Length: 113
Length: 114
Image (cartoon, rainbow over all chains, first blue to last red):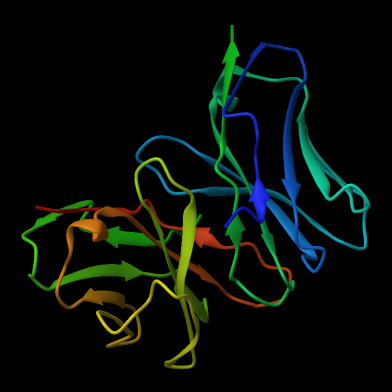
């Protein structure tokens, strides 16, 4: 099942620079997308979401962009901080009124001081 | 901030044994979920639960699995006869409202079946 794909298993950026994490999906029926962050020995923590009726959503240092025609979303973190080092999961659902999420494989972000 | 709590953090069991994983969702939440992550693989949906019944389940959630909300606070996942391939991290999650609400996950229970 490859409905949600994060093709980069890892990303390394310098503190203060922008981190861009990418996610592709295949099911055009997905209409709600989320990004979660996960530290070792912890559960996923919600970061930011976007509905399919939007193409951008911002929350502080985090911005999610959605390109429905390309079935692609991205998470921008700017400026990146060492505390952002974690595994980032993209997730999608067929409806905003369900908690059934389809997750990507995750991208490990390392922010170097 | 309220949290979803899961116990135990690590459970080791022998193949064929029954295991119960426990979760205390956030107190005013109404929708409850179990997900799992096998080592090196994706986080996968298992089951959703609302109003004391299963609202949706995945193909993984076969007759060996069951969920229960035995009282007003706990939400449990039971695996009746564990297999080696049940070894995984099991995450409980909850939300208050179903619409446009992100899931709040617990820290997980690592289940090791030997």
